[in-house]
Image (tube, rainbow, N blue to C red; front, side):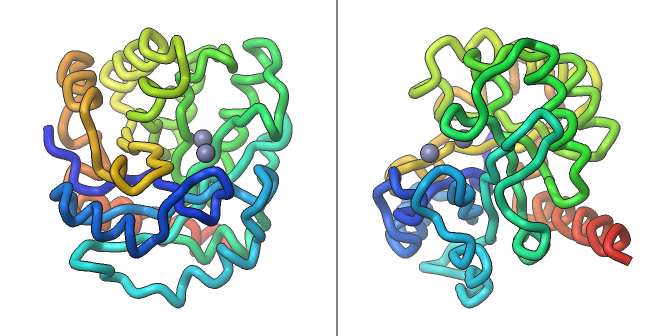
Length: 242
Ligand SMILES: [Zn+2]
Ligand SMILES: [Zn+2]
């Protein structure tokens, strides 16, 4: 399967990533993807100030011939799914990822880690959770995949996990299998921290095929499907705010 939009990328603003937005866009174009979402880490990871997220709207929708979407990888701060970016910032973004990172929340037991992810999925402004296959945070994968389904949110399959999160592969396989069984939406992200990684999907297409996930479940399989997901979520977020 070809994945048209990369839903998880980091720029210099993340503090431990190494490319500018312009460089990432040029690289995405060369890679042959239609677009990418800029999901720099939320403020609790270090150098990204909340103003970074507030001002993303000044960037154009097209950069160097690819579609550009605004986003964040917010940090889950507690087992109630508290996030490190206020709603006033989250609601300005196209796509909100939330994830567990050791710098922001120490790993707990299965019950605690699972609850943190489920609460994040229940957050009205969160669209997907990032790298739930990270073995540092053992979870009840079925409960998490069911919660994503119930809330109309996506589970991320993370290409970068195969590079940098040792031991992720069996967990990702199991999570993908559960997404196929339950019918949960899936978002494919590279977790690029350097321009050459943007849109570079090497293992995920095989993982998706082997798991039995249907193309219709992958929200970023093409530009139209991703925009349809964002439009549906924007309507839900708006309805929640009224
Ligand atoms: Zn990072
Ligand atoms: Zn992450």
